[in-house]
Image (cartoon, rainbow, N blue to C red; front, side, top):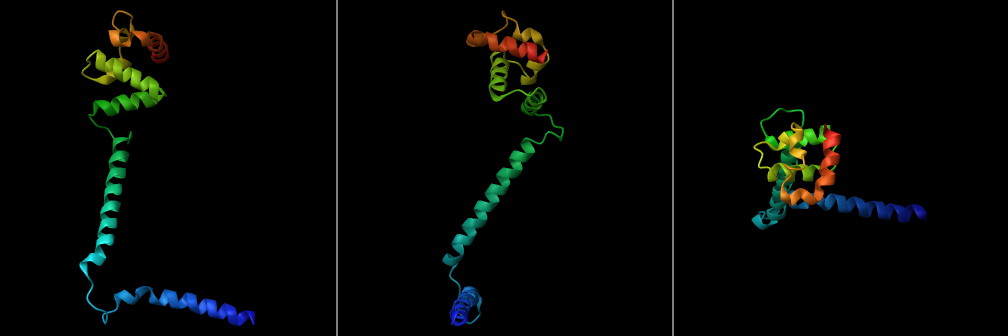
Length: 136
């Protein structure tokens, strides 16, 4: 008795799978373009996601050489194991000093001296001194 119930369930599942391709037969009416809209939208979304992933990976690929000052700053930050707060503080220091290359803060300890620190970063002078000791 159990086998007949299970057989009915299995046949029901098979018939569902057999009907899966019913819309692909030539004898069916012509396919409406609106039926392809969800597929087209899905493909566009996948293409956008792939493009974003490729750009982010290329931006953060530290094995390729480039002439990007921002990437050099990120590489030096990674090499010194700086956390996000320290990176942001160094970036703000470079912007406040109007340095042509933000990575210059890694090269010249004079940028961290008390008289050279811009007014807007004076309240973070202790953190800058910690970074000075850590970097140099």
